[in-house]
Image 1: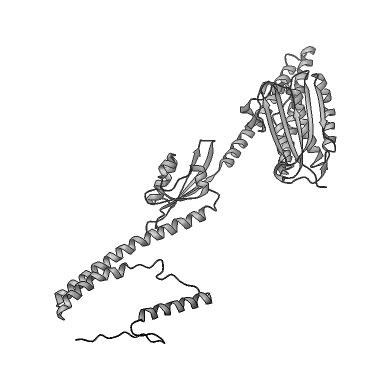
Image 2: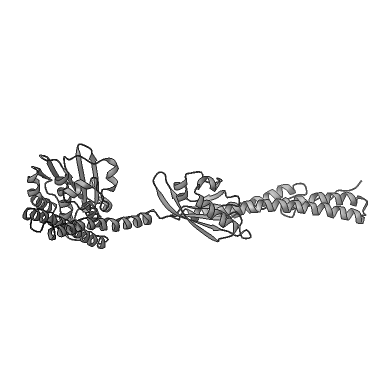
Length: 456
């Protein structure tokens, strides 16, 4: 009867039959030592470890062991075993090749999303099928949530955008640029850039789409062109009138004293209108140059408002308009230029008198507010209210544009240049304040000016 060989584990107190208990004890002592010394323990096997290669060799060795039962293996049997082992290795390779790109793609797009979220402009990453694989928060704010996996053709429907994508994917242009416009909810202009990634270098990202907003630049160009056209028109009208009256006085009305007196009065009005326009243009230009420099002087709102009421009083009396001033007690001084602030409130009160109804009341209220504009500190609110015809809602956003008039004929009759509220806006901006307008047709308008309080 064959004898069995005992397995002996060295160590005190361990017999031949309890080697498993000894192994467990050895493991427990080692684990306790590691925990006591607070040593780092690593996961075994590591998370990225795969048994696929090992499993791939098992069938081959099984075949080889079956052939080797008679202690001899022929060449054909060895070749068959090698073939089985090779097939298993190929299977393991395909399995690993499928796992690796998925991991790389996941890391690639996840890292890209984190980096792109730090960019202010909308950016999207596209794969070879033109589907979004990553997008930053700015892109989701512009194009909506849930962009991942969507076709770019469903997000950018502009033909110029599709043309840029086609050129970038075909390799015709490394970086294709186009101008695109989004009409809703408001009209916005963007510069679209599509950068293609060469196929030999692309893993999951085939193209990068970036959108840079240029709405402000487009609007500035439009306003600049409109400004030149408006100035030319505003100066051409009185100059044409002056030229016509001069020619008439030199010819047919040369001996007509009555016509000469009437024409000279009109010429005087037109000349005064040109002078006011030029003065307003110079004033606006001077304010814009210094708009980024905040005034540091102290100015008394009580003094300014009282002085403005006195200046406009004569014009108000001609229309039987009463000016009322309501100023809070102990109203603090504001941080600002006294002359510029006087121009602000003189423009507002003058407009209230000119465009308001006769036998009405224009009110100036000055109170203290807790939070003022961008400074975030206390401030003073001055409200100029009238009892005029009011302003329709569609005109309110454009009131402070240069040469913008609701009723051009009426504005010319009362001597307006269309620059008053533009000057007011720029002066208030220079003082780091805020201008707001509320109006209701038939009930009048309220112009609110917030100014920061001067430091003690």
